[in-house]
Amino acid sequence: MLNKTPTIDPAEDNAYFPSPYSLSLYTAAKTDFDGLSFQQPYQGEKWKVLMIAADERYLLMGNGTFFSTGNHPVETLLPMHHIDQAGFEVEVATLSGNPVKLEMWAMPNEDEAVRCTYEKYLPKFRQPLKLGNILENLLSRDSPYLAVFIPGGHGSLCGIPQSSEVKQVLHWAISNDKLVITLCHGPCCLLAAGVGEVPEEFIFKGYKICVFPDSLDRGVNLEIGYMPGPMPWFVGEQLQRLGVEILNSNITGMCHLDRKLLTGDSPLASNRLGKMAAEQLLKYAAT
Image 1 (cartoon, rainbow, N blue to C red):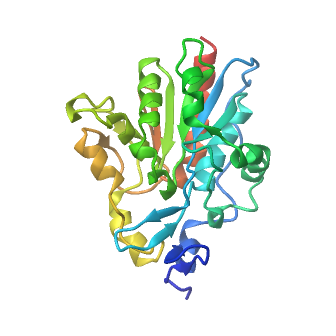
Image 2: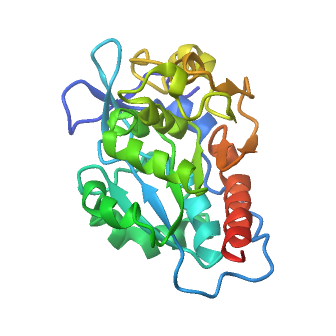
């Protein structure tokens, strides 16, 4: 039987990758990608999608260990593939302007859709935009962005939920009828919309979403050695305190669109989420 002990990451003191056993359960060489779902891609040059990615590798856990994480490659690249193939260029930004951090231990190396998207966007991952430097253009009347995409992976908890810049982006998106796309732990980004606000005025209050279940982070993920210690805080719990309704209790690939907020429950939702995102973007671009 494979080892359930988290694997040491030698690049940082007291840091760990997921255990071999947990990776055997949570990762695969291929995804469930089964082709594109639209008839004709967007032919114009005006509209783009902004992705806000993780720029921090290490999440400090409740026991003082570091989880060596980042954005999950399937949750990042498979939705990107659908969006890109639908004709919408994806601009990549991080809070610092430093490179995007991906959980390369979860890369499906035999999946052509994921690999070709990774190779195409690798230069943007290596040299992303700094979010603060593009806010003026992003928030302008003539903004070229139709949507904001914030992928999951535990690395999304590092800085994004506390960012006043992400807050500005989310408030702009909701106020201007733009699509917000996120999945798994990525919905932690919604917490940024409440930075400095009273809970009663949280812009996502009353929304229904899918998100990675706190119950798995509290139990199974520790038992199988996916994480080296307890979570510092729980995404679902924090969102529920602000009036968000969580639809899923497990991970099945569930996705949900509430107004302009599109969410998915886990890496299993990546393919369907990408299809739904492409559909919504094409519908918007046609109006």
